[in-house]
Image (tube, rainbow, N blue to C red; front, side, top):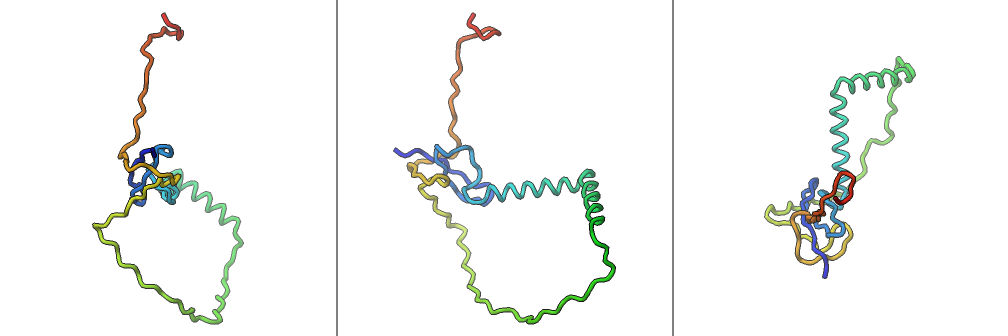
Length: 146
């Protein structure tokens, strides 16, 4: 019998995705490039926060000072070369697609989005809860039974 899957909505593209029990590691992104895109956005936001801080502004000013010292000093600029042919080539355009209706939802496949294995028709909306079995015996501080 195929394993069950977990249905979730990708945190980046908002598409529904299913992950099988074997691949489930608590993913929040689909198998597309969403995790990389979210990581790039997170790094970009962190860099912007750093640039707005005092330490970031001082580091940027020092880096630009070193850059200007390396550059060759030029007082006059030459004229820009004229283009030989300023005409643009003819391109064919395709008509835009009609937008999908708001009520239509994308069908969810019957395979895991990560390993492509089949799953049973049953899906979970949350993670599996693992039961923790605790030893009911009591031990002293040394780890030995009393």
